[in-house]
Image 1 (cartoon, rainbow, N blue to C red):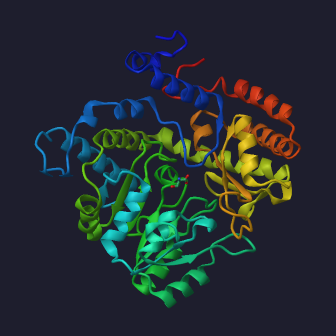
Image 2: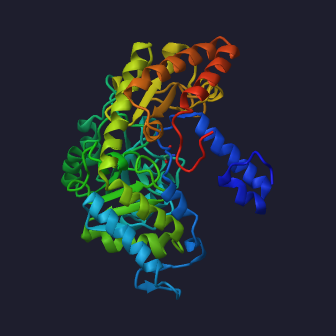
Length: 425
Ligand code: DSN
């Protein structure tokens, strides 16, 4: 067993040293970087523990009390606990905790409410939506008649007159709101008004902001959207999984769509970890965490603006920032790659009305859920913006020595902020 392995991977190394080495390297990478991908986080030790339990050994197709396999005495209780915690945290009538991840959860929505060829409306991917909201390369855009809305060119905000006009013209059965690159508050009430007018089911995809909603740092869709879809691993800080929540009216249709419509056995170890995360999210500490995510994002946005970054919509209301690097004379991809070499991890992203291709777009997308989990606060954001500025400029000038200098400074900077589940160096 190699001496340099941490205690976390030493046991794994007894069985598989090659794999243990990779886990070790990834753990070190995560602890030595400033991780700014807005859909990622660091889960707690308890969530990690629940994920690595014997619950992974069990098949349990069906729902509590109605399974197709025996031996569900405890699995039923685990799933029920997760459901009850979701109901209580979000204030919803019904929760299904079985979807494997966000895309399958959204596909279950299609199966519950639409037939192939029916009309669905969602925000287009390059404007900030999600693949599964009807984007053309996704099954949802190929098998359904997808009508896509976007944002206004002037201020990058959703144009509700356009959304209403599209809805009246195309009469979608389902309208998705929410997305993956939306730096502003989602106005669920305005979407609900339009959905009512055309008799569509409004689905709020809160994958990105679920933790903010749970912690009171973003308005809730409950009372506006009868169906809510979310992943559990972003701001909610749980394992990689998803949930569908709804009013009682849609409970049966959604449950049938998840199983047997789309999936087989639920991943019980994930369900357990979701239950743990939901319990954590109900604590007062989590409210402080959610508020701090937003405070950090605003401070980081302000610091980036001061350094001449062009932010889509001019800033942020939530955890996420989208920057158009056109004015910095560099594409999003080479900038993201240089930042990664410098230990600052984010992703390249299209910006609304992007003239460049999705694989080589104009923007970068970043956010504060992970750094906030580590304990960074507003006072640290100016330094991160300064490094980003240095690296983006250096990347344009092929100045690798600046990138190497920042790499060293970043490593030193994050060292006092340990990550859960990983030993302090
Ligand atoms: N891949 C997720 C994100 O990064 O936003 C969305 O599915």
